[in-house]
Image 1 (cartoon, helix red, strand yellow):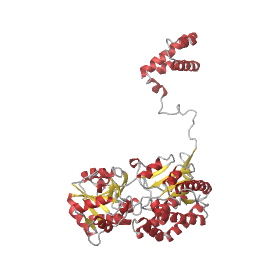
Image 2: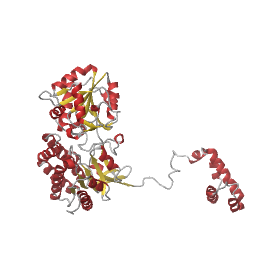
Image 3: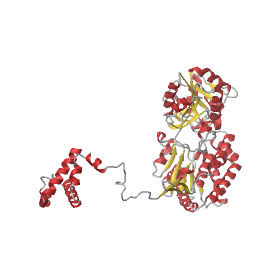
Image 4: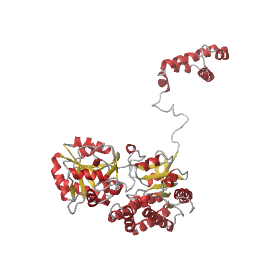
Length: 532
């Protein structure tokens, strides 16, 4: 193997891990709730003990985000997640409808493949390992090449913690030679039961195109609307807390601010007070050129960077204490770069007349991250319900997008895989949990006599239904079962014959002994044509 090229070694490793992972999946499928919970608790302990060092590794390797915020993300993926799922039913009977006599039972899917992004590498690895174990599955990871070391370390810690608590060998693993070839090999492996793809649009599309069942999540482009009834100080505080968290690397974070003319001055003043810097038109153009090199895809060099780094690279200075760069925009789409997703400390800024214009603008912005998330700050419930019709899977109210979308500050399930629904090309629209990694079987008892369902159903009238066939029913009602069978045979031969029933010598000669039956068939055919 040492003499083989890197891509060949990585592909072989992917195959080996898939086979070993399938064996582990078959073993853990027989574990009970006590065994699973013991494993999870040990994984949480180890994740908490190593949360800070994993965060440090991630920042050093990728250059994205902040150590303290990545530490909290690791905590969310372990401790907060565990408390959310510990009582979730994922083994045996999970529901029973005694009235209708239907029992639901959970079965693991088998081997899960986890695709990990570079923006949230260690927290995503911990999260996916946790939900896989909770649902009695094994998991094999495909790390992002730009975050391979920290991802592999997180996986190794979770693997050792799980095995220490009684899990099978190879229950959690990762490709240590990450290549596109290895990722593709895993996605198409017959041992892999399902893929959880968290990453760029290309990787998510590849997962759905692999032929293996997949849960993929798309990009976000969340607008935040500060409506006229909002507590502006609180709204800005939440937005700033969200956008500055890990330097904006969470896909649910705000990408554009929308305010109304009537509260514009107050909103601008509050942003400035809390560390927002409104760039000049020239500075905005410089930042746009810096952030977007090819089309609307963001330059990875500036993902998760501080405003100081971005401003310096763009060639202008900003006040001390600046937390976010804000650029005014007058449109959406081509020619307005800040109307697209920016996983960094930069926001677009829009002003509208009223909520009607805010609705239209939100829809336009969401087209570049459709199905993901949007937020609204208001005290008017009617406005909230109007915005609830927008094409976003999460409508967050009076909270930050980062904290609200991941479930840290809302009642949503804690998650680092946020579904975008069919709007965004995803198979799920909610926050992914262990429940997405189980097969649900249903045991259903007979509660009705299947021998006379039609005759005992007061809502079904066979005669009335047949009368709608313009006389066809009358022809069949006067025929014996033998005649119906014979008629069907004649019809079948007629359909397969190159000539019509009336002129075909072969058909007429075969049925010449029963001209009455042939005539009846022709009547039925005529009646059917009339019904059509």
